Length: 86
Picture 1 (cartoon, rainbow, N blue to C red):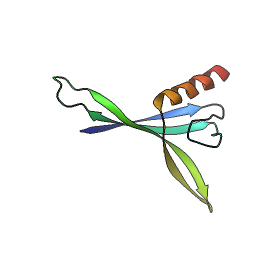
Picture 2 (cartoon, rainbow, N blue to C red):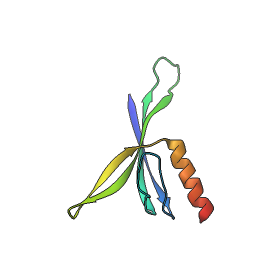
Picture 3 (cartoon, rainbow, N blue to C red):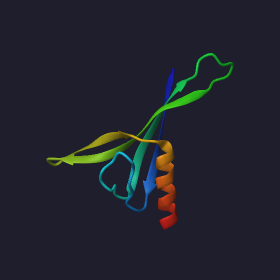
Picture 4 (spheres, helix red, strand yellow):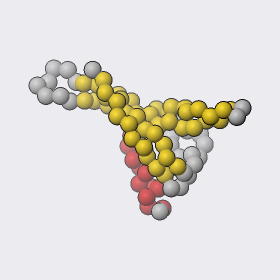
């Protein structure tokens, strides 16, 4: 059994994430986390299996979202750096 949670994270300054070559612009980004239910326990426990951030991409005048798999602790660290600058 899977569940997905979504949140919007906002950066006030340009930032970097591992696995993304370019500096990302300040702005709001959608983040989704997928978790699966751990079987065999007497109470529900979920384990994270993926976290993705959706980045805007542009090509020939069209805009779409590109999903990048990220480490949630790296996203947290980027948000902390952003907050320290603000």
